[in-house]
Amino acid sequence: MANLLIVDDDLENLLPLALALEGDGHRVSMTDDSRRAAEIVHRDAIECVITDYQMPYVDGVQLCCALRSHPSLAGIPLFLLSAAVEPDDCPHCWTRFFRKPIVVNELLEAVSALLAVRLAAPTRATQHGPICRQAILRCELTAASHWTAINAACWP
Image (tube, rainbow, N blue to C red):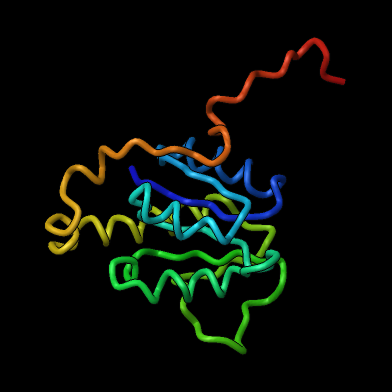
């Protein structure tokens, strides 16, 4: 499917979302630090970014604006998530906004739809070629699919 990056300072939001996206066939990189997100996007050929809005240091809107300012990243889908209302007092530089708690299936459908449009675009194939699809991603955190299983005997 696609190389995705999730940026959220709250692991209780980050990890289940990563698991859902991996379950849908995507390769997921994660970070809880919005300042490192741009580095990951460039290093791992990320095709879509999902970011929380309210984070310390650099918030999700600032991250989206910074990513949009790079010509090579200007077209990637950027999803902004927040428990607050969609910000309207700043430049609207994200592709789509989702209010928390999100409906995971709606997010999965939106990601798939936007990525399908990007993959079908003729400039996409010539710009990145097949190497992009074969990129090996290095996650900042252990991928959810590699977690140790819980022993059901000790579950309350």
